[in-house]
Image (tube, rainbow, N blue to C red):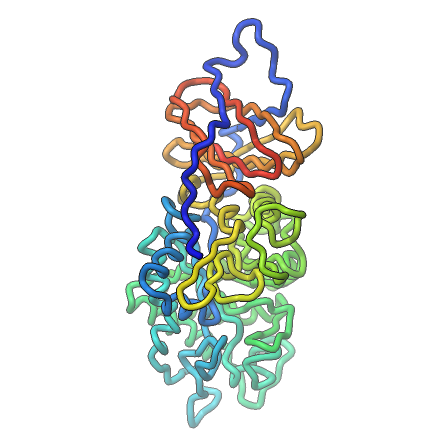
Length: 474
């Protein structure tokens, strides 16, 4: 079933020309005060991955279905307006299904401890991740993040791409073949250069994924000290190659698991090598901000329960309203500049993707996608900053709010009503020199344009239905 872009028009908002007018009482309902001069972190955007050959799955669709999916994910006019794409930097010696093939699948000979590798060309344009990157960039993506789940098998203590193991040469390892840190750094450098040859800049590169876990798929373990041992090799290698790509670390399986590794890197004096701190939301959800001056992204999170397309039915972990709260709180509580779901689109049987590819060219969109869209580039642009937004008069504590100021003077405010009744809210603190738009997502609406007001000075009064997300674009 091909989902259609919703375009229904429902009047939900009213505008008062001056507040309060003479003899008028202050609003009795919740008041959302926006403070444009209270600025927090910058904003890089939202994103997804198509690693583990899901780029190939997209490439196999017919052209109309390809464009539909790509527009849903990346278009700021038709879809979620995602601005970050996370690719998989492969370590597998083969192209078997679900494997991410390495550009250096075999150890060099005759000297296994050499720091130089005999690289091969990217297989099938990196399993169509080159193609996807080009498509995403053409639709407005700003950042390409390449992340390795593991080093190649011959560089590790367990001589296996899977089931954990450590990079030979870091603290507390001993490998008969020697120290493979420089070889791993050289491989990453070559991978970035290969993408440059396609005209694609990799903005960030990571060398670990969930290093607190040992898994039956590509994985490599590391604590903070061991990560620092490699960072102090990779950083100068990239610099000497004249590469501006910045290093990301460490994609811990959860927020606190990553905090532990970041703390170890800081203790080892290697934080200076990082351009980005990255963490997932699985083992522990995003919480208190990391103590770092570096930018922070939440780079992978999803659910694995039965297929769910709903916004809200019973409050399950895979519903759209749940994810709207996750996204908003990760920006407002954890102070991230970027938020990434796991797969954008995939042929899956659980909720790992935002869009299901069912059969050859059958595309079905979940409500989780539209939760992300409220934080996409349709409303929040590159260079934006999160600004102050608080709620008073919310007697049921049902409302969650966030606000972002764009460099062109526009402002996006997201209001989530987790309650069971409609809330009439008053939005104050903004000057409105342009039309004010409100956009609604709930079980019945997918980013529906509710009303457009003539631009003027004053407060905005709007009805936020129960179990809904209403965004204001001022």
